[in-house]
Amino acid sequence: MAEMDSAEVAARLEAERQRLEGLRAGYEEEGLQSQSEQDDLSELSAADQHQADVGTETFNRERYLSILEQVEAELGDVEHALERLANGTYGTCEACGKPIDEERLEAQPAARFCMADQAAAEREAHGS
Ligand SMILES: [Zn+2]
Image (cartoon, rainbow, N blue to C red):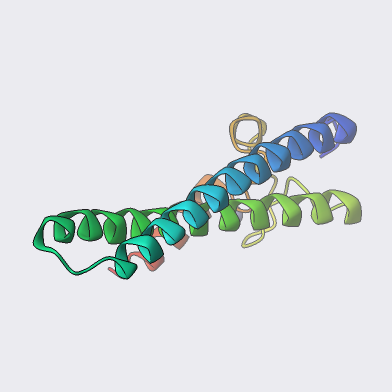
């Protein structure tokens, strides 16, 4: 990462972290709200007209949990990138050790792999 300005990269990662933490805080608040709504509903009689609402709440909660998981994973990547920036390995692929395209890092500052290895990792994750 010879030509890369590490202070600028750090600032970009910090901004990304703050954005993700803001997102997470928002989702957590929303999640707590839907949780307490669910509690309210369960205190009521199981009248038929409530069934649809309960189903929707459950669906939203699942969706919210998967989004939250995604945000947590991205936050982890950002923290990881900050660590690598600190120990001087930022900007190289964790699989093959080659430098990652600067364009790719600009679009995705927390990228851990070069394009080829990212594609390979994704293929593996999808289990085909
Ligand atoms: Zn690679």
